[in-house]
Length: 510
Image (cartoon, rainbow, N blue to C red; front, side):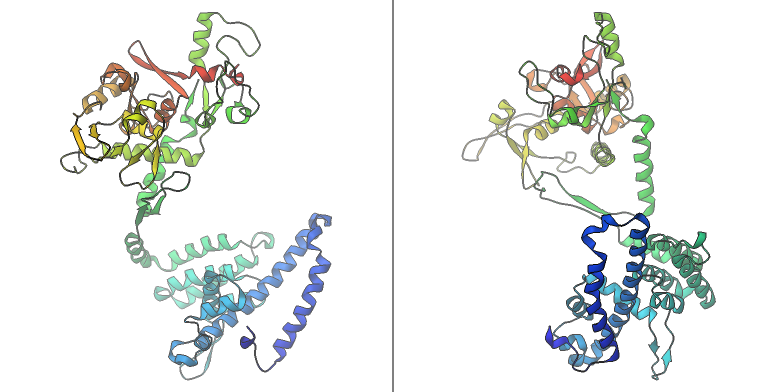
């Protein structure tokens, strides 16, 4: 980088050289490896002083970055500063010189252009676009983040706002950012300044919201990966318009309200399966509890013993079991993901969904007869370029039409079976009428229309596809049943869910 150093010195360069020489001494005196020796007041005071130095440095960097951009103007051609050093853009040159990120370099240029003096076409000096922000920035009272947030929002309002109104907004925002006239002199953070600046923008440019709304509409987006992560997950993301976002928030809030939090099987002993799993000693030679069980807090007494050690009669045990609860330990993000799964199921079953080759949208799963028989191994879902565990395939097959295709070792189809297994729409309506409008797991608020139909006696074990052998469970609770955390049986014609016996025998349930 020696070719980037100036050939001729200046007073500014000499001052900076002197400052850099003293910087090492300052860092030595601060003793950053032993900050624990400072009192709380000393720590905060020194942090404030360092932040002031940082803001001053940012102001200098912003002004210099703007000057680099001016000298790198494309109209200069090969004589531009960036071009001379073989860079296409001034931000690339700034990245190399400063070691900052591309985003930070761009921010420095923008802030510098809005807060430094300008030159008219006639060569006359002009004041900065935002003089109040410029003064506060150059005095080290605000940093580049706050300056960027203020100038960005007011720049968006400038084309349709009165000049004097912009000046009032700029002054007010700078005062809030520096603490002048605001709550005992406490400044607002850069993030809070952004919120205030947006409020000013909306007030100054009331007619500008429609063009921005249309622009936002065109930016709506959704994507989903065709490959899985190393953990076996499919990533997706995107952005939606504000009306769609608020509807989704309302839906999630209604279903995931704490007052309707899913609890099953008595809020007395907050023992965590996950926390105790490491110290628990399996009984009866059983294996350790699967990871799925760790999604719940065990709050149930053992089958025959109360928390105080007294014995229950069989009738008392049945009553206690009926009142028992297991607390749902899913994170908020996991619950939202499960609601999304239910939404997909509900939409896919809708009568208005376009058909493909005369059938509803279809997920094609391929799995060998050996894997189905052993209930262990992997299969393939067409469209996903990764093997899928049998537990996932089992859940899909539980609520799906199955058309067995027999393929010989050479890959040739030798026979095609008939459609079987799936519960039809009328049967689903009957289960909703019998069990209620939500998931059959007590207290779960996922609508039944978004639930999957479960064979109480598995179809592979001769269980029929009729209402007396079916129950509707949301995607999450259906998985918990298929993985053995819960068991379900029909009692007096209705599904009854209990903790799997292999888990109830564990020490932390007693």
